[in-house]
Image 1: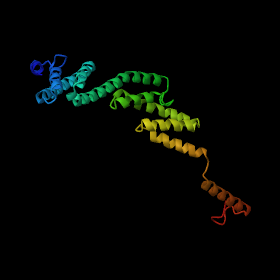
Image 2: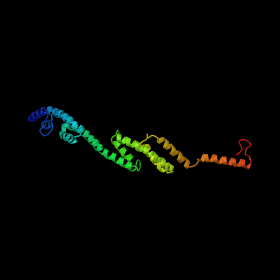
Image 3: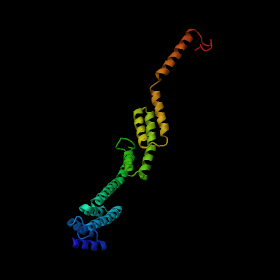
Amino acid sequence: GAADMAAAQSAEAEGRLDGPSGALARFAAAHSLDANNQQARSGIERVAIALAGQARSYLAGGDLATAERLQRELAVVPAATATASALDAEIQKRRQTLDQSSKIPNLLAEAAKLSQQGRLFEPANASAADRYVAVLAFDAKNADARNGLARIAVATLPQIEAAIDGKDYERARRLLQRVQKLAPNTRGLTDVRERLDDAVAASKGPTPEQQAALDKLIREGEIALGSEQFLEPPGDSA
């Protein structure tokens, strides 16, 4: 116990914190021999905090391997498990971020290829828009994805217009809904939506109320003709 404490204090003073002969291991050895040794426990906590700080520095620099090695050393020391657990959570979060970031270039390349193929917003889940949205899920401020999505949204409006002209209202509605969902602030979107609504309404003919009014007008005209009320009396002529 005493030898371990002496070795631990010496190692700590020299800045040798990790490794089998480092301060953490030596303080842990002393504490394992005497669980009531407060000096050893304090040493563990102090060195654990210092090692966690080093690990975070490596983490910030992208050196996950070294950060993970230090975390594993902390994890095997009972008195340092809380520090090890907190550090592990940070490492996993950083790893996830790096993994996601590594996917962004490929997603942007796929989006560009799909755009060239004319697959802007369709088919769903296999379009340029879907790839740009995936990038934004990883990095909401990614300029390439934001600009790309805005660009293809504008380019899709003529496709919607063409579908309306061709009376393919189902496709026009489907494309419109996709753009509304993924790029709702697209300029000109409201005008295209109104044009589609008008075209669909016109294709369905008059409403029952409009048809009833038209039928009434026709009947009144026929009655006026039958009564030879072409001009007189006012209001009763055809």
